Amino acid sequence: MKQRREASGLTLDQIQQTTKIQKRYIIAIEEGDYKNLPGSFYARAFIKTYAESLGLDVDELYETYAKDLPKIEPQPTVQLSRKQTYSKASETSSRVSRWVPKVMLVLVAFLLMTAVYYVVRNLDFGDQNASPAEPSNSGVTIDQNKDVPKEEPVEEEPVVEEPVEEEPAEETGPIAVATTSGADLTYEIATADKLTTEIHVKESPATYVGVRDTSLEGPFLAPEYPNQSKQNPIVIEDAETDTLRIRIGLIGGVEKIVVNGRELELADSPVTQNIFVKRVDAE
Image 1 (cartoon, rainbow, N blue to C red):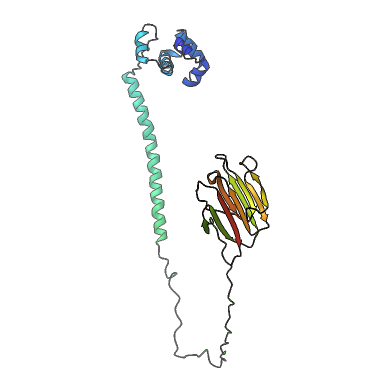
Image 2: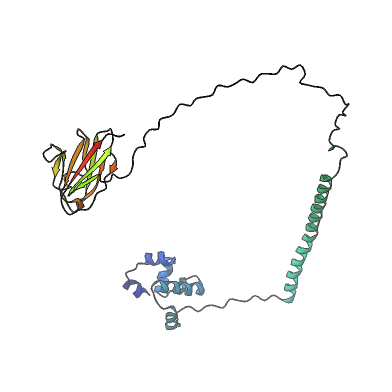
């Protein structure tokens, strides 16, 4: 087992942690010093656990080293004489007989208390629960409403509710393409705010991105970026124009375009695309 442990590169501390056997016992097993183990039963149990942790066949190990392994010592059987057996039985019977009267006494007391409780609970104490007698009717009727002035009902003025103007619900969700012309896509967003645009580009494939005011000749609203390494995302805040023109070299290199918090629905196309974002007045 020592050779197997060293060949496996395992230390005594690792075996101790795996098998939960103290290291001094592991050393005693490897050196065949079984007198330092706590008895033959534990010695064989420790050897079995140690062998299994190394992947050895325990039965083959026991058979091969049967002469060297400690033998299991027979445990002495204590036989009591007839007198001792009778004495122990008498002692047990005496203990039981001493407790039986006490248990019976407690049980009888409990039954008596239960019976008294139910008798007292159901006992009739006379006419205490009887309902008070109703006063006799002498045949004289008193009109309590006589000479009492009647109050005229007050007419309440109807309450006129003013109509509440409902504010138009703010649109959410992606912005769909409004018009398509060849490789040009036009999106319309109804808002009174200036256009704020975020263009998120992918690491691969790299793409050209340029943003101008309206047309091909319009001024650049953001520097021309040949790829995403310059800036990502490309942000144009509060553009002073109603129409943005975003030129994309490769649409597959764009992750998403967000305008005023809403994402554009992008369409895959192998050709260069011009994306126009127009701000229209909200109704």
